[in-house]
Image 1: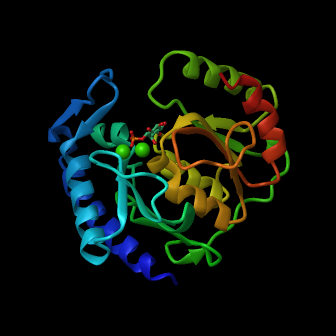
Image 2: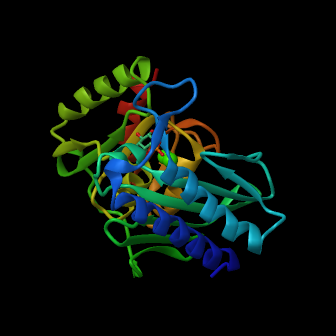
Length: 265
Ligand code: IPD
Ligand code: CA
Ligand code: CA
């Protein structure tokens, strides 16, 4: 177990505790629209406090490491020792009282994911992965499903915060997928947890035409360590930057690429 994993776990739990406390009174959580964004892209006091709690623990243990976190920490993604944090993934769910949100903490060394922890505190779920050691859901090893055909699976997707070209592209990819008799589409609202669901075999694939590094930093390792595959929507290795993303159980990767790449804006 890498030494950073223990800290990733306690940091994620500190964030989860903050998030859960606010979630119990979600209707009264203060939030505001992010600068330059529209009404549906908000930051709440819970996001900010959770990030603060997570960062405090990492800084105490590793004062020299860099931190890239969604709300207020903007390190260079190329730093040798880098922590990538989403203090609450699924803020819209959170603010509407839907128990589908995640706290995500990942540690990268020289650009490579070393370990990651994602918690869904409202459901008491933990997802932990470390490079070469596998993925664990509530302490039990997980692996992707064996499905090889689209007419055997559910597909997850997200719309980022775009209501223009990306949204239209997502809708047209979705329409094509329905033509392949997929069991259905799921838009669950927390990218970190969508990735966990691919790893646990619940979704055959998940894609999104734009995502930020904190949305996938831990989840991509969780999928890979569970035997799945994660690339950009045109089949390139995933950069630690804003990008499009396709995660699958591996068997469906080529088939899914053929579809998501065709609609890529
Ligand atoms: C968002 C969620 C959502 C996804 C968006 C993300 P946030 O994260 O993961 O499911 O569709 O692209 O930005 O803003 O709630 O942390
Ligand atoms: Ca997020
Ligand atoms: Ca977030």
